Structures are given as structure tokens and as C-alpha cells.
Image 1 (cartoon, rainbow, N blue to C red):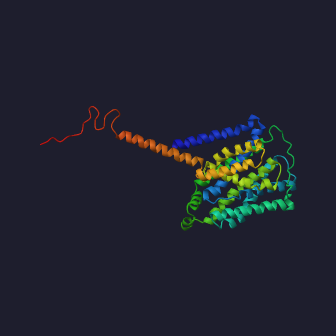
Image 2: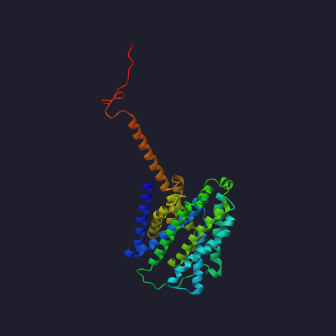
Image 3: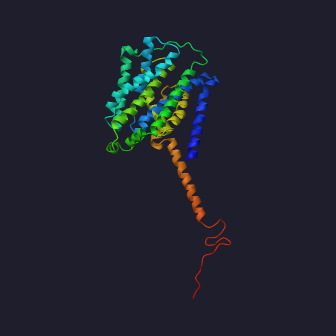
Length: 352
């Protein structure tokens, strides 16, 4: 068990070291892709803090993302901010999303499972329509940020390291929640909410807290996305494809686990970036994503990492069982019933 923990820690250290040096290569396109990968890592981890730990599948995470986008966009527009100070606005996007998560959660979390999914979808479309039709959001035209007069060779580096920081903080927070009493309560709700309530768990309060934490992280990433993408448009800020993507990442890697969403994001987002550049049909990547979602749900419902872990555990148990059977049987090369030299043979009773 200790060796497994050491291997995981070593793997995580190597992964962080590789992630930290990617912008130093000077490849602008690689850094740009890296920003999106880290953004989705953080979003998938945030989604998993609520949906994975409680079992409530949310398809409304794009509400928090879009609120973060438009919060930073509107502050920038009215205060005419530019330069490095823009990075201080990202937590404000997360704070606005957390505030929205309170009434959103109070309404949606009164229902269970499938009804909850429908409610989150309905709230998402309400926010998308609001962003598309209200004049103060810019409507379909959106909001354009001030031009950042930064060096073209390193223009994405600040976004990259900020996204890396948010992703690491989200991962550490998920780990801390998992090992805490709060995390135990979340998993108790996932296993049997009625029984958890009977044992004294304040289920509504616990669920709402996880919902707000998830919304804050996602909204912070939305604020970063505004300056990285250089616009706030309803179809991108409130994008149903975003919800589907982060849910698939969590399911693909391992729903409700700590490392599953990270693995799923690292595996899936590079493909999505490549597909959008290579495929002329803009909907082809989404069709493939939907088909992949069905395949994962049907054949890998627990995700890649838990499934592989279960197979390895079963294989080790099989090898131990076979080794035990060989150890209790006769030594190799001797017929059944024979004994090794120098060992006492079976006693026989002489006839009287």
C-alpha cells in the first residue's frame, strides 16, 4: 500500500514538472493547447467534487462558467481595465458564480437524480437566453476585452500558469475534501441519501456546500477564459458542449475518484483540440464525443482507472492463489503420493 502511494506521488511530481516546463519550449501553439487542457482539468475536477462525490449528475456547470465569463467581461468593460491587473479579476468571476450557485442549488437540490438533471438543463438554457437577449450583456455581439499588448511569443504563458495554478488548487481541494468528514458525508449521500439523513447528515446543507465550491472553481476558470478567448459570446460562455465534455472526462477517467477526472481531461481534451483543427465539419467532433459518451457509459461505467485497478487486483489475487496451490502440492517432478528424499513417508498399518 505504501509503495503504491509512493508511485502515485512520484507520478504526480513528474506530471507537474512536465506541465511546468511546457511554455519554456517556446511553442506558442502547444502552450495555447495546454491552457485549454488545464482549463478542462480544473473544470472536470470541480464538476467531480459535486457530481462525482454526491452522485447527482449536473449538466448545468456551464451556468457557472458563463457567469464567470460575463462577470469579468462586464467589470473590464465598465472599468476599462488592461494589463496584469486582469488576473486579479478571475476570483471575482468565481465569487459571482458561487453566489448564483446558492439559489440555483436551493431549487435544483430539492429533487433527486434524473429530475435534478432536467432542472440543471432548464436553468442552463435560461441563462443562455438571458445572455443572448439582454442589452447589458452585449446580446449576440458579446463583449470584447481590451487589447493586451503583450509579447506574441509569450502571450499565452500567463494564462497557462494561471490555469495550472487553478487546476492544482482544485485537485488539492478535492483531495482534502475526500479525506475529510465532509467528504465522507458526500459519499454517504451518494450511497444512500435517506440513510445518511437518518444518521444525522444535514444532506441539503452538505450538497449545497459542494455545489457552491464546484461553482466557484468553474466560475474562476470562466473569468480566465474571457481574456484567453478574447470575447464573451453566449454560444461559447454558455455552451452545452462544455457540460457534456467535462462529464465525459470524469466518466472516462473514473467517476467519483480523485485522479479519474484529471486522467480523463488529459486524455480527451488533446483529441478535441486536434479534431477541431483537422475536421472541416464543426459538428463531427461533437458527434464523436456523444458516441464516445455512450460507449463509456455502457462498457466502462466505472471509468478507465477503476476498471484497470479492478483487473490488476483480480490478476494479483489469481497469482497469489496459484502460488498458494503450488506451495501446498507435491514438489515439482514427483508423482502424486511420493515424498521427497529424507522426509517421512505416509505411515502404513501392518496387518495383525
